[in-house]
Amino acid sequence: MKQFILSLLMLFLLSGCQQHKSEKQEQKQATEGQVRTELTRNIKNNTIFLGLRYGMGVEEVHTYFQDLVAQGKLLLLPHEYISDNGKIYMYKFNFGNETPLLQNVLATFRTYYKKDKLYKLRISVESEQDTNLQTLKSKLKEVYVLKYGQNYTKRENIYNNSEGYVWDDGETMIEISEGLNNNILIIYTDLVALKENDEKPVEKLMRVL
Image (tube, rainbow, N blue to C red; front, side, top):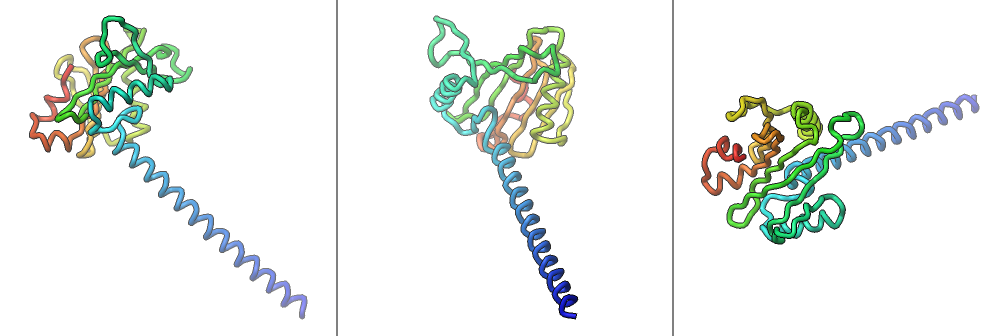
């Protein structure tokens, strides 16, 4: 009888430990999920590309680009006639080895300011394979879907009737479209800054080529 009671007691204690362990594990998973959500939210809302942020000043952006060059994250196009403020910075996309035609894809940047605050970034992306524009656009779309989700709309380019993709959460708009120079344009726009400055319709401003 005593042995039976001890067995029941042991089963009760083990059950309690397992339940406590399960609750603790669920709490840990919930906490980790919240952390991942916060990190994703901060990346999406506070950064544009390579850590650039809306609202940065002209000199601040220039210094930031120089720091990225020093870290090896950007390349600097050498040109003895270009001043410091006019230097051309390049970013090399790394799509892995799965797409052999996209092994040398470079991007250059153009920044736009309102009252010395960055509100738009245009990235011009080009591949050595000039005939591979559709593959490049599809790959960039795939990358941006992974980061920003499937909640995008399709938009026809008014210059060449090609299909583009737009993510718009009411605060930031991101557009991927074909440019006129056999390139792909990625344009980030701070919609809040546009509203505050009473600018022209967003659709027109996004078409700066």
